Amino acid sequence: MSATYAPDRILLEKAETLSEALPYIQRYAGKIFVVKYGGHAMGNPDAAQDFAEDIVLLKAIGIHPVVVHGGGPQIGKMLKALGVESQFIDGLRVTDNETAKIAEMVLSGAINKDIVSWIGRAGGRAVGISGKDAKLVEVEKVKKTRKNSTDGQDENIDLGFVGRPVSVDRRLIDTLTQSGMIPVVAPIGVGADGETYNINADTMAGALAAGLEAARLFLLTDVAGVLDADKKLLRTLTPSQIDSLTKADVISGGMIPKLETCIESVKSGVDAAVILDGRVPHSILIELFTEQGAGTLVKLD
Ligand SMILES: Nc1ncnc2c1ncn2[C@@H]1O[C@H](COP(=O)(O)OP(=O)(O)O)[C@@H](O)[C@H]1O
Ligand SMILES: CC(=O)N[C@@H](CCC(=O)OP(=O)(O)O)C(=O)O
Image (cartoon, rainbow, N blue to C red; front, side, top):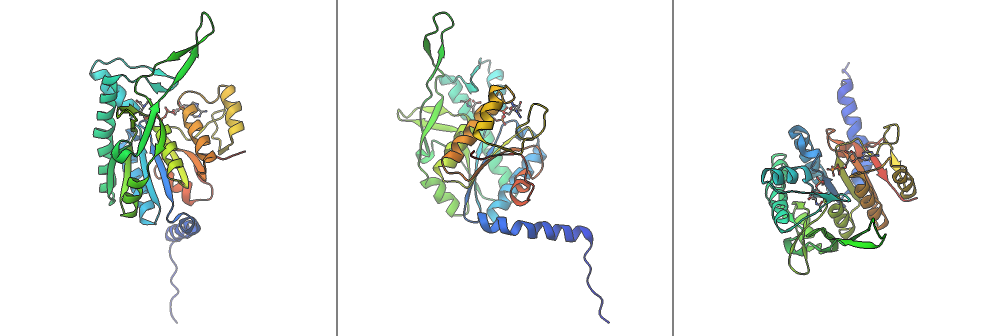
């Protein structure tokens, strides 16, 4: 009598997890995913290596990940060390000439190359670029106004070299992704005047997701997702729900530009935009390949 092979429970669960992922793998093959890795999320080296492994896994199963990174806290630290004052208006760093140079140095020089190394260590081939390379992202200067407290008139606020993406030339990204490379993009752009502009990294990721007709936009941050007034994770949100939660002050600070980016990208054709916890190991894989998902999914009303 021949013995029947009985795999142990853990092996069986692993096989079932892989099998559960099959329809998702088939659905996403050949699609572009833009993944934004925030400066707060990159603090933990183990989580950073897990993040890099997830990106390499996506590439290995035929998805084309494009990484956009932040680095706000790291820029802040460098400015402080150099004795340069810095302030934010509506979540955007006021960026004079000197600040723009330091931001570019920290983003393109240090952080970008760290991420390229992590992906390399995980077995992938990453290429570090910024929006300046091959004129990937052209910007115009952000214009902001606010009401003058004495006469109530609108007055202009000058944020300096802060850019708003106005066009994406996808040829460099397509060349890299089609040759098996993983682009890692720093949120720096070029103006029509040839000047260097600092771009909020969420905004940069949203502009790339729209310009590259991405299937998914993932914004990795340092919270579980969007939380309600009782600090419970909200699994899905629509633009009208976001509007009422913002008016009620439940959504505030850095979460506002993040959600605006999600709304704009789903309106412009990205299938889904998700806010994920970058501190949780493999949050990208949990979101993509399991039915319960992770984080907060933004979809149209
Ligand atoms: N309703 C909310 N749910 C979760 N986080 C929120 C909410 N409202 C405001 N936030 C804040 O938004 C922050 C994330 O934005 P930000 O600090 O800009 O992240 P990152 O550096 O990753 O881009 C959270 O750490 C949290 O303090
Ligand atoms: C114009 C502007 O504010 N640019 C941001 C760019 C980095 C960023 O957005 O990084 P996080 O995603 O880690 O916050 C800054 O200078 O901090």
